[in-house]
Image (cartoon, rainbow, N blue to C red; front, side, top):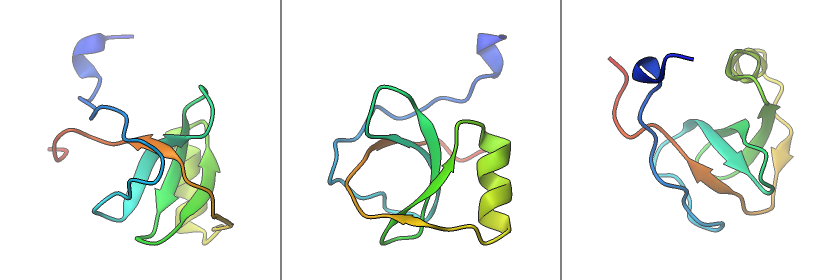
Length: 79
């Protein structure tokens, strides 16, 4: 991997801290990162692969996860 092309990420936020914006985040209950969608209220199932998680969101496959997750997101807006 070319590390220069990897986006800068925020530090991990603890479980129970809610993201300020809706969107796809890296969120996990375990040590395995998982891309999940945050709708402003709940986390939804996603995928280990970002493109697959985005497809599931676009297709309306949103099964909510009601337990708290630790998460991280982009440190800056994509260009």
